[in-house]
Image 1 (spheres, rainbow over the protein chains, first blue to last red):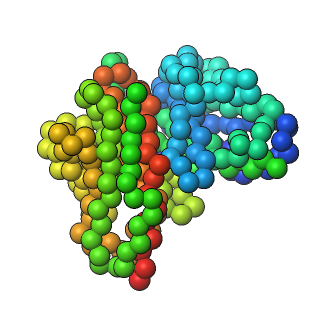
Image 2 (image 1 turned 60 degrees about the vertical axis):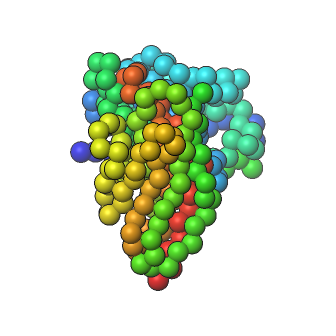
Image 3 (image 1 turned 180 degrees about the horizontal axis):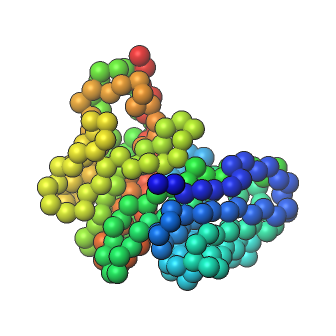
Length: 117
Length: 115
């Protein structure tokens, strides 16, 4: 079974530039998550999609971050303009949900490491 | 709001030593509990999980964790660590009541095992 695919693996940009990250979840997984992991900290949820609808984006800095999942499969996370504090690993994860039950387990991609100079 | 606390930031052990990593969560309702591991250069992967039933759960590579509801704890244990257990360990929690709810993670514990 193919895992969660992310690209690019690494990106270095200047502050105020823009960047986009792409994620393809495991086939059949309706729920997709973007997490931000700053060095020395645990992953923090940015946004959660159920199919192509947003479930939770309460921690997404909407003045600079945006995300979409137009066809309910792959997703793009964009940062524009980037700040120094956005330097982090951006993790995509997916999970399988059946009706109202929660299988719970998230499957993670390898992450996209962003360095903002 | 849910939160997860991991007591140890960095643990250093010799091979064959026993391991216990602390995890406490803050949430009033029923929870699912997880331990994820991130080996150097690899993605986060599930070590073990607790949904319901026997509070002592066993995971991969000889790890186990015990859910103590009265203490809101889910500590990770291994009787004898190996050099290959060097990694970062994350405790996480979510709610089983809602489909596909996101995990909330602790800050992680870095385990360094010397041979």
